[in-house]
Image (tube, rainbow, N blue to C red; front, side, top):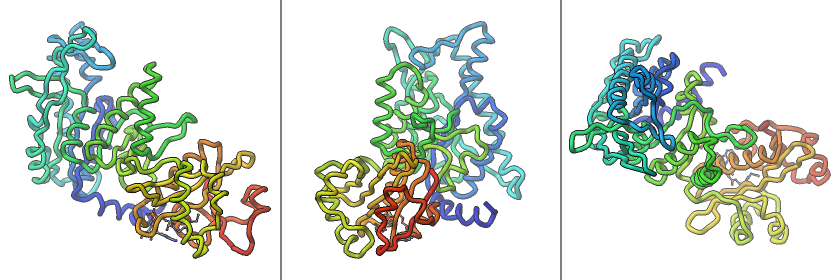
Length: 437
Ligand SMILES: CC(C)(COP(=O)(O)OP(=O)(O)OC[C@H]1O[C@@H](n2cnc3c(N)ncnc32)[C@H](O)[C@@H]1OP(=O)(O)O)[C@@H](O)C(=O)NCCC(=O)NCCS
């Protein structure tokens, strides 16, 4: 993509993100990686574009190395570090060093650009009050703690002053003790308390993968909950990291964070690609879809008919009888708002041809432009991929541009599966559009 095209595509996102609060967790592994420079410069760039940033960092590899240097072994229980009196010194040193490293990198401004000299202010402080985790299953976690309170007001003040707020995974108790916290939990607590627009986890994973190994671009709140429950049930430690990220994401979404992103920090420019392109590069968990998108059941037939009748009359959709809809209801997904079906879409697989059809995509007039169309398309694409399809096609009379803007290209009659070709209604003169999955 050329520069002009790229800039045009990114520009709307720049406008949409300005003035919003993003909380970003940089996992400890990053601190040890030369690619950290790129990620930190991207943070400076985001700040210069007007985004309010709270960055929470980890320091795990440095902590473990310091503990080992003392001739001790890092201890964990159930994936949580145990910070005994011996380890606490190493924790403070390593986190302090990581903090300084990040501050230094942020002070470089936006390197290799005309903004290299621009001042990026960094603010830190005692924003996090902590309490001890205590004793669990007989293990005393000693100086490992959990978040008790976030000083939102103090963070807001620093953000209003134009600073990037840099937070370490340490918290203080009113009794003056220091507690070692997990960066992901601190980031989640801050995002939830601040009702941040986004919480971003920069991790060592590509995002969430489906069982076939394909990246899932978007998860609804319900899907994230179901996946987290599956992982918990499997409980074999296969993907603890993903499990804990999902639990944190769910907590954030429940507490007013609109979007959570799980992205791969190892990709150069990961943050920019995720925030300024439509498809992104990781997985986004969407809290707005809270309970709203789901598989249709037989009880939805009435609602769907009501939604699509006017569109059938205008010729936008092919006519479907109630009986046909009843037999095919398992192919449908719906968006429900206040008990009414406000959008629907269907997916029909043609496994022999490795194709799938998106059909009957409809959004109630009052809800157009609210991205329901886009989200249903995304859902259908995922279902189609899971059914083994390599391409998705759609027949449309009035929405060909909507699909073309989303990567579909016009195709001839021969692009249809054989059985669908015989049923093609030449009188309707629908356009056939196809997109690779
Ligand atoms: C096409 C349709 C599903 C889009 O739903 P939606 O929820 O409004 O879509 P989104 O919010 O994801 O996208 C909205 C964008 O699409 C544009 N758009 C909506 N309908 C369009 C159409 N027919 N052609 C081109 N662009 C269209 C809007 O202008 C808006 O763009 P903007 O933000 O740049 O102004 C909806 O308009 C609809 O129900 N149409 C009638 C049924 C139909 O034709 N279905 C397709 C046949 S299967």
